[in-house]
Length: 321
Image 1 (cartoon, one colour):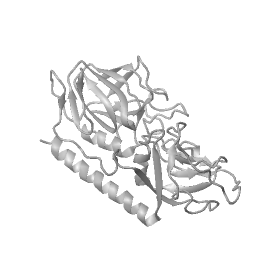
Image 2 (tube, helix red, strand yellow):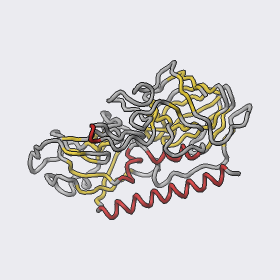
Image 3 (cartoon, helix red, strand yellow):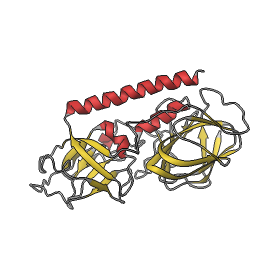
Image 4 (cartoon, helix red, strand yellow):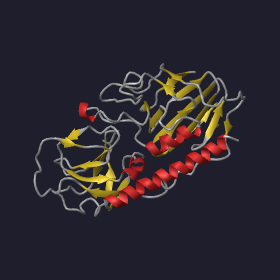
């Protein structure tokens, strides 16, 4: 199917789970910022969890579907209508041929994920469909969607019946506790590689998300962090979750589009299980940290993977009916 883009939205990109293994070339992993929501969205439409889909930031696109399609929206709570009918998230929705899907603002959360049965088909670069905006590669010519674009999709794993109106599943997935917009955001904090800041300097304060945040990093504002030493050194490896402290003392949490090396002191690292929720933080929202150790971080990640495995089994049982 060839989907027509009537409106690109604020920042809508083709993403998948990224392109690992190329850091030695200076190419970061990239991919979806909130991997939890993206995985669930793909599972809901019968795709592999690593299929290419759309990541929508703060305000979404308008898309015309010439043929019947099965979709799912996960992540941020986004305004969504098809043929003037409101669509909920975290469940499969079947659209009739000729539908126009209009995605508005994200009411809560920063990034929504639109999965389409069959997945979005674009040329793969270094084994991935993910859009690298800084490198200008992957996705649609390495850029965000814009009016007049067309998206190709693959064949769905299950046929989509012809309908006269959208069909919305009566069941849905509860994403809590991994994605919960009703709870305050608290992230598990591991010690940094550079011991030039007090161990509890991040966990003793609440931090506010700065408007300069993007897919590369979540910029935080709060009391300026005073380092015990300048910590000047050659650039060293960094990755999503690394917390850097630039000269102004305002920390940066690296996200999906993290560079591969950096010269700022690395004063902490966020537990991997908490990265999906951090990707949903909006400018002005508050983030707190609590100190954990490596054993606790591994336990959090294993628990999250176990929840995803149970969700996958539940979805497969529902779709088989």
